[in-house]
Length: 127
Image (tube, rainbow, N blue to C red; front, side):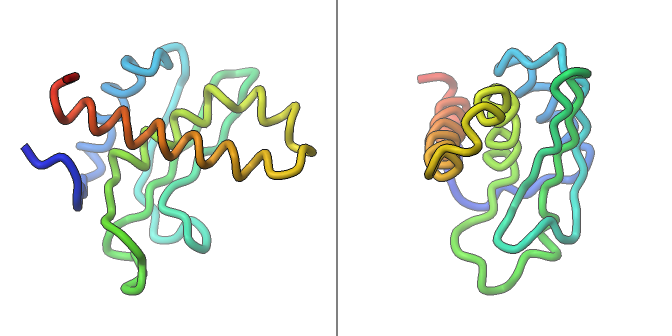
C-alpha cells in the first residue's frame, strides 16, 4: 500500500474519511461538515471554523483543481483533514494562549507532526 504521496478524494470520499477519523480521534460528539473549496487562503490546504459551545465545525479542504502549480509537496487531503480535526482538540487551549509569543507556530508544528504520524500509522494498518 502507498504510504505517502498524492491522496486526492472526491467530496463523498472526504465525507467518509471524516466519519472514520472522527471516531479515531474521539470527536463523534461534534457536528462537523467538510467541503472542497476553490480557495481557502494563501498557502492553506485546509481550514477549520470551530464553534466550541455548540461543538460544531466546518472544514474546508483545497480542491486539487485549484491548487497553485508552484505548490510545494504532495497534496494529501486525508492528512489535511486529520490536521484540521486535531485543531478541535487544541482549540480551548489556543483561545487561552493566543497572546503568547509563537504559540500559533508551535501549535501548527505539533499538529503537523501528529497528523502525519496518525495517517502514516493508519495506512500501515496500525503497525
